[in-house]
Amino acid sequence: MSDRTYDVQPVGWVQSSLTDRAAAPRQGDEGAPLARIVLRPAFVEAARDLHPGDRIIVLTWLHLGSRDVLAVHPRGDPRRPLTGVFATRSPDRPNPIGLHPVTIETVDEDAISVRGLEAIDGTPVLDIKPVLGAMDQR
Amino acid sequence: MSDRTYDVQPVGWVQSSLTDRAAAPRQGDEGAPLARIVLRPAFVEAARDLHPGDRIIVLTWLHLGSRDVLAVHPRGDPRRPLTGVFATRSPDRPNPIGLHPVTIETVDEDAISVRGLEAIDGTPVLDIKPVLGAMDQR
Image 1 (cartoon, each protein chain N blue to C red):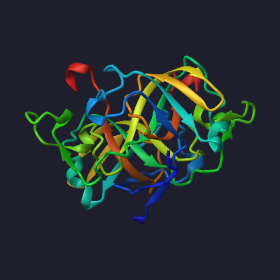
Image 2 (image 1 turned 60 degrees about the vertical axis):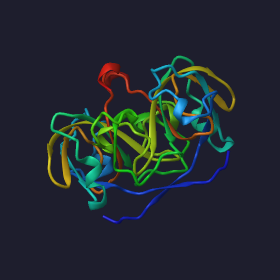
Image 3 (image 1 turned 135 degrees about the vertical axis):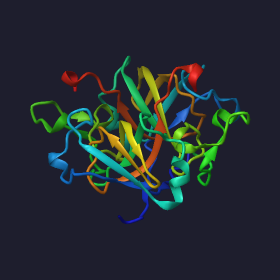
């Protein structure tokens, strides 16, 4: 078990009217606006089979997260007990990767508009995956 | 939008009887064995509030994935059309991060046993997140 690290590279970025972490909804189903994922040219090919209506999971790099935090008060509420970050969705965690289940609204040449993404403007996107259907549809 | 890269560091590793990518189930609900997540000492604190029965999502680094592949035949079936990797769950993708929804069986000091993890032995673990419940339980 080597403890080497690995490099992740943004495949694109979030374009959103949300610009402030403190004002952003804590989860995408808590009032997130329509947002765009703008792909880097080198990765447009990987997105060619995404279509409006598809349910996808967007993986982001929560670049404002604090990586040395191991326990937090859930949802920033000091009345809630300090909780190990692996039992929370806090953006403060050793590898601040965000998971965002969203629905595709429109697909352009190099961008995808999605509904339900609470990441702020400029957040790097690491990956896009389809939500898995039933076994016979995989 | 800077195109800088980010470093991810394993917080632990998968211990499993699965040792061969070709023989591993393609998804965790397709016959994965009981497996263990062994945490590095520095990250044990982050896992302290995980309990048997919890539904979690394990994020892994699929270290055998090919990062320069942008399209694949889904599930390795050559009869299926070449498909952009963002519309598949292929481990071959620009940032080969795996998502594994599993259920915790037991929790030890520095390890968690889980049911339904199809990652092979030695796969680096990047993060653990709770599956989100209904809004009033967050």
